[in-house]
Length: 173
Image (cartoon, rainbow, N blue to C red; front, top):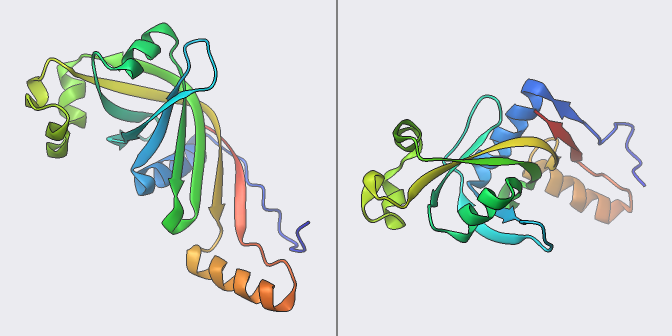
């Protein structure tokens, strides 16, 4: 039970939700990308986020013949799991993925590091772009940053009082 007067639940929607998604996804940079074509548990692979747009949509580069692309073709529902341990930020998103073969999408989201996976560069026939449009999710964050949260935990441990600095809530772009 929290002894704080403040409410640690802060549900976000619209622009505020998109901003929170961008903030956590960009700082974490890598997520666990889960697909589940009609089965559980999820098949999860690490993926680098190429971009998060103003609406909160997330963009990834992916191999055309990858299992992930095959799963999305069968069932476009996905779950993305982010952990930015250094800043104590966490995010779980559910959404719908679409696969694009558009040259414009490839150019917009290509980075030189992507050549590590696509040796033929942007023209590699394996390159596709995945857009995930989040429908909802949940985040956990600290209100004042990791340093203040750590200090409050130390004081709480010494005094025996809960001094939780966390904030959490639903996101719905």
